[in-house]
Structures are given as structure tokens and as C-alpha cells.
Length: 344
Image 1 (cartoon, rainbow, N blue to C red):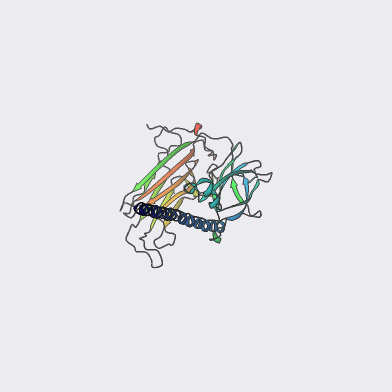
Image 2 (spheres, rainbow, N blue to C red; image 1 turned 90 degrees about the horizontal axis):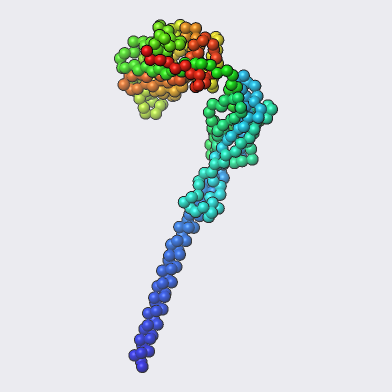
């Protein structure tokens, strides 16, 4: 009888110990899971605080005009506002940790009034992008970005009512039948004294062709060899230049958005594009230098791209060149009316 009681006591003790171990194990699991959860929530709180500091109250004013400076009313302005997520904890509970976005974007639209004005307000964020401006009979070129940050006050791009951001649309007229071409030149090292002739339109039977060519291009590229001055970042820079000389007519650089209306005057014989070693803004390439030109009594436009290389070589590209073979200054382009050049 005593033996049975001892066995029962031992069994009871063993069970009690096992239960205690199980409880300790469960508590340790809960504790293990709870600690990361609390740590994660603390991180979310910090991120929310940072987001609220980063976002600003946006008050943006814009004005829509046509190429002549006239206000455009009733234009639909589609825009997006990007913001740091100020509701990380709430969205984490709703969506789960893995799906919680650190930034949020909202797409909206407004319309310009009779003065071409519109405004964006009552919203917080770090950037605004004007994605599209639409009205029948008008063209919009490209989206524009405006950034904001409380941590970087110089970046604030609020456009107040007194100085609205200007957005130019092109009021469509009668598009012309234009020649559209692309022409590139490559200059090898140590051959800079050999100017090359640009025939934007090749072969005699094509519209706007001239046997003398349209431009003579000369280049110089010093290549690697000169060390940077002491106050610049450690990099090797070099002198280079490109001269584009009109054969008969002229050329002028422009900031015109559209390149659809060639000016009648102010053309120069040549255009020089350069970079000097040691300049703080030195660059080895130039992208999209917009030009109008007049060549043999016809008008055109192009975007010039230049690339120079440490080995001394240079590439010059006349990109998206448009020419009106009739002699009109109208360069409004319609792909359906494009004059296809023939390779003869």
C-alpha cells in the first residue's frame, strides 16, 4: 500500500513538473513573439513621426497658357501627390506588416478657370507631379515634378498665387507635311582637324536635299591627360568643343518647348558647344540642345546630342530633325503627314 502511494506521489510530482515546464515554455514563446511585435510597433511609431516631419502642407498654384501666352480655360489637370505614410500602425494592422507601404500616392484632377488658373491644396506630401493637361485641340508636352521637404527647406517648390507655375500647351493649327530625319557623326581621336559635312536629307530626289549639305561640323577633344584642379572632386576632366556651322542659312539655340514655330530672324552662322577642364559644372556629354535652323531657304528644328570620350573621340547626333521643304516656318508635326525619305 505504501509503495502504491509512493508511486502516485511520484506520478503527481512528475506531472506537476511537466506542467510547469510547459507553462514556462509557453510563456517563453509568448514573450519571444511579443518582444519583436513591440519592437516593430516602436519602429512604426518612429517612422510615423518622421513621416509627419517630412510631409508638408501643399499650396500649389498653376496657370495654363497656349504658345502665344493666352490663358486656356477648362483644361483638365491630372496630378499625383506622393507622401510619406503617416498611418503606418493602422495600415499595418489592416494590411499586415509585409503589405504596409512606406509611401502613398494619390491621383486627382482639377480644371483651369477662365484665366487659365488652377490650384492644389488641402493635402500633405513630399512631391507633386503634373501628369497630364488635356483639352481638345491642344497638346501637352511632358509631366513636371515639384518636390518638398521640411528637412531641406531649399527644396520647397510652393507656387504661390502671385507666381503660379506656368504650363504651356500647344494650340494645334494645320500640321505640315515634314521630313523627319536623324543624322549622326563620329570623330576618331587625332582627326579633329577634319570637318565633316551633314546632309540631313540624303540623295538628290528627296525633298529639301542640297548637294552642298546643311552643316559643317568641327570638333576638338583633348581626352584624358589633364588632372583636375584641387578644389574639385577627384576625377579626370578635359577640354572639348563642337562647332556646328551652317552651309547656307543659320542656326540658333532655343528653349522653346515645342520646336514647332521657327523664328524668321536672329540666326547665326555657327553654334559652339563646349566644356573646359576644371569647370565646376564640367560634363563629358550634352543632351538635347534644342535648335532652330535655316538651310538653303527652308526651315527646320532638331535636338543635338553630344558625347565625348576619354580616348579623344566625339559623337554628334542630330536627333528628331524636322524640315519643312515648302519654305514655311511652320514645323507642326503630324506623323500621318510625314514625308518619307527614299534611299536611292
